[in-house]
Amino acid sequence: MMLTEERYSDALGSQAAYLGEMATWALEQEARLSPKPALVDSRGDGAHSDMNLALMLSSARCLEPWFAEMAKAALTLECDLELRQTIGQLGREAEAEMLSVTGGINTHRGAIWALGLLVTAAATASDCEADLFDRTAQLARLDDPAAPRAKAPSNGEKVAREFRLPGAREQAQQGFPHLRQLSLPTLRQSRSNGDVESVARLNALLSIMTALTDTCVLSRAGLAGLDAMQQGAAAVLGAGGCGSFAGRRALAQLEARLLHLNASAGGAADLLAATLLVDRLFADAIQ
Ligand SMILES: CC(C)(COP(=O)(O)OP(=O)(O)OC[C@H]1O[C@@H](n2cnc3c(N)ncnc32)[C@H](O[C@H]2O[C@H](COP(=O)(O)OP(=O)(O)OP(=O)(O)O)[C@@H](O)[C@H]2O)[C@@H]1O)[C@@H](O)C(=O)NCCC(=O)NCCS
Ligand SMILES: Nc1ncnc2[nH]cnc12
Image (cartoon, rainbow, N blue to C red; front, side, top):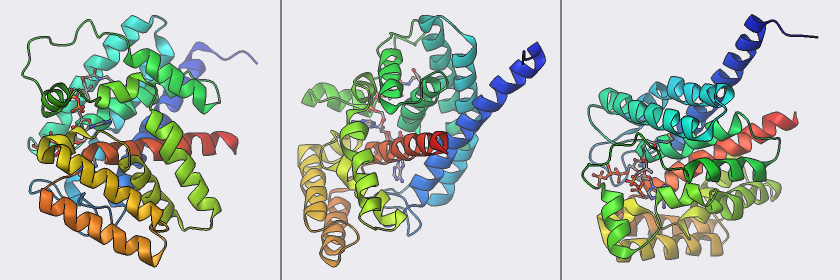
């Protein structure tokens, strides 16, 4: 049956709205998950003096229309460079909205990047995860012609340059290897082992922390902090994961160490949200 122009436009709008809703849902689920080591959750502020759960949730909710607009752009623009420029502008506007809602606190700048690219790619990707990640990498590798050039380097840029380690940009440009190789398999294996959902999600977060060069941790606690995060997360999973008594004890030790170092793995938290988004999109697609 041929769709009228109006009904076709409505169909695009509702698909984009769904993707925006799923991205915000993923950020809310990540923020609420507890106990996350040294991160904001339902227990408190982790290694942060300026963030709490209410602020994270307000930030997540204000981003929904921006994620939907990015998905909508993918459904209407043919040219990838034009699409990359459009989502770049939308991403910067979303960052401004986030800062206005949070009173200047950077809650989700990295998450806007990661989940913005994923919803943009998801709008036109086929029904397989590999295609989604390939499409995301393709977009992330494009240079945004309208990106402001002369700007002060961010915390991440400074440490990525100092330590010559990859950050959020490279993670997306490589097609989110930590999701493909670590967190999605861990999430699903943990579920099939009979772990409850919150344990499966915590195990997925820890799998990311075993290997991520998180620039938040680097800028706050240097290589010692990164090593403490990676080794400590591996110890939790090696002890049986967050569903075991030994694993929970190792998790408490990891949190104490990271708090002592003032190290907060905001990048890993973003990638957990990205994991939940991708898992949900493909679970919904199968039904
Ligand atoms: C490409 C951009 C992300 C540019 O960002 P930048 O050059 O700064 O790159 P990174 O620092 O590497 O990443 C920025 C944020 O991404 C998260 N992150 C860190 N490491 C990784 C990693 N290895 N892989 C994936 N993601 C990573 C992290 O964001 C989260 O943490 C922040 C909160 O933690 P906190 O410690 O509080 O951070 P600060 O406030 O900076 O420090 P304090 O002062 O508190 O100590 C929060 O942002 C979380 O989301 C990194 O901070 C991208 O932003 C960009 O270029 N945008 C322009 C628009 C655009 O083109 N968009 C396209 C599609 S939307
Ligand atoms: N739960 C969280 N705690 C601290 N930083 C974060 N960045 C994204 N999610 C976060």
